[in-house]
Image 1 (tube, one colour):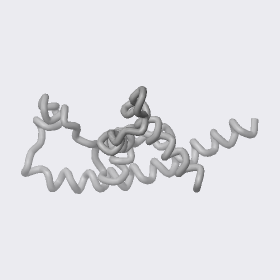
Image 2 (cartoon, helix red, strand yellow; image 1 turned 45 degrees about the vertical axis):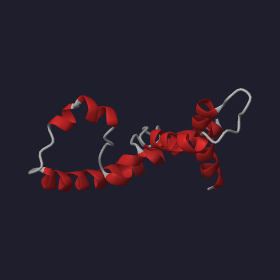
Image 3 (cartoon, rainbow, N blue to C red; image 1 turned 90 degrees about the vertical axis):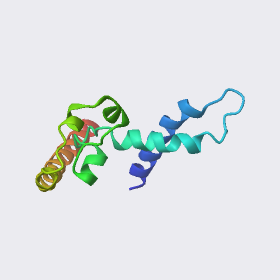
Image 4 (cartoon, rainbow, N blue to C red; image 1 turned 135 degrees about the vertical axis):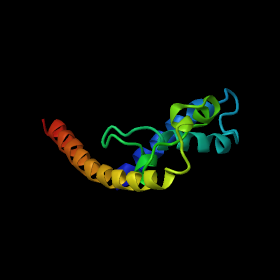
Length: 119
């Protein structure tokens, strides 16, 4: 379990370093502002092991980015308040299916890693 925590911390640090490094003042307080953006990017990036984003696995839908709102993405333009309830039920069914698929993909990924390291 510590390896997973270490990996997550490493990913956060890799995201923060290029954003906050200032040549003469590398420990500036800018990291507090940038941390939320780095975490958002990690939560909306697809995982190679499971094929879904952490955001999708929690909420059952893709995240809506600010650029989607600004430029009127098709998903935003096609939103219908009347059909939102039925869409939510479909999304919950899809999330249950995604959890099952994720378990299978994760097991397959772990087996491939195990095979690679034992080779």
